[in-house]
Length: 170
Image 1 (tube, helix red, strand yellow):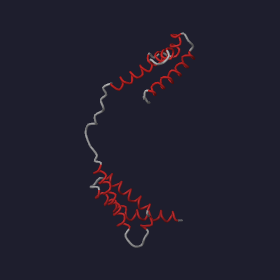
Image 2 (tube, rainbow, N blue to C red; image 1 turned 90 degrees about the vertical axis):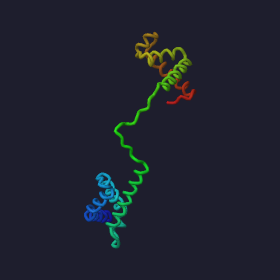
Image 3 (cartoon, one colour; image 1 turned 135 degrees about the vertical axis):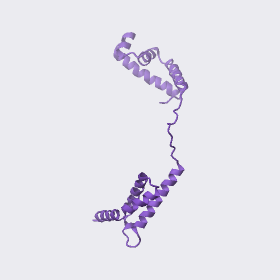
Image 4 (cartoon, helix red, strand yellow; image 1 turned 90 degrees about the horizontal axis):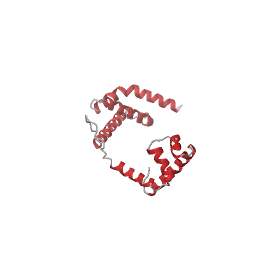
């Protein structure tokens, strides 16, 4: 029953004050319809959360709504002043990379590959750096495809451990 009473109160509040609140919010936002809609919506949401305040016989619900709307508009204005929006016709510049980071990573991987066993290094070079398929790498090395798969698994695990020891993380 309580929920029904609150719904009725909110409908009556909307019917009686929505037009005036909209006009006031539009004035507060200097005619910005989108911001005015946000102010009205937030005001009515706060009214719904504080239905007891609006149900009092003393005082004006419209006065309360206007005060809340004014405070919301002021808070929005202050927030926009603290973090002004930058409008520009050009997107910001993207970071230019000179390839140094990629070169360092390549150097670290090459050095780590040198620490692997020849069998593990060969399978990684063929499959990852030269682009051979498992079947082609197996033919080239003269081993079964399953051997290529297991060597690749263990080689990658060993390579990861070597790189982690050097402080390289994913």
